[in-house]
Amino acid sequence: MSKNRPRHAFTLIEVLIVVVIMAILAAAVIPQVASSTGDAKDSSLELNLHSLRAQLQMYGLHHLGEYPAITGNALPQLTGSTNTAGELGAAGDSYPHGPYIKHELPPNAHDGSNKVTAVAKPGKKPTRAVGTLGGWQYDASTGDIWPNHPKYY
Image (cartoon, rainbow, N blue to C red; front, side):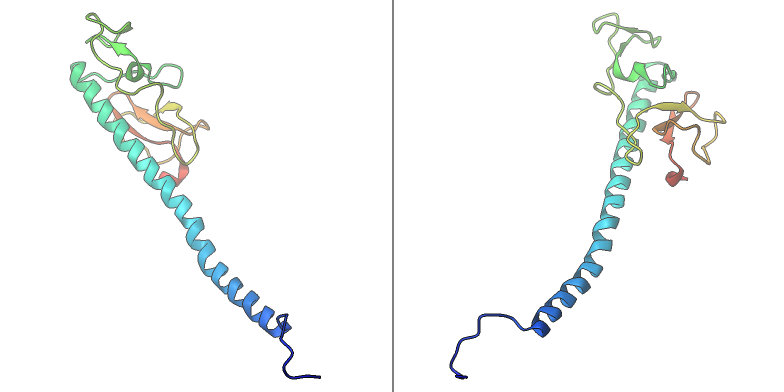
């Protein structure tokens, strides 16, 4: 055999070393990527929660301290035009307030639901999720809203 012959392939040892290095890198990176999905959901949830609370407070200011009522697992008074008494109607002089949120409530990032469920004990912060709808827990007496998801409590 000639020693000047060029080499055209990797040895088995070289291939195994590369595979081991790639496995070590994957073991270090995959958990970071997996946790970033949860972090993104938490951030989205906090942003939507902050926006909902701000709009509910604005509604309360426009409606003499009264907050919207739950109708069909939604808060239609936030997404439509209302008068000072909170009655829904066509936007204009008679119904000057709203919509506070365009189209529909934002979804809870952990379960994708935008359904609204009444809190179990009005006037108190919830300590657990209520029902199976997910989405949001809402207290119409105070205008407070929370995620209706076990991870939040």
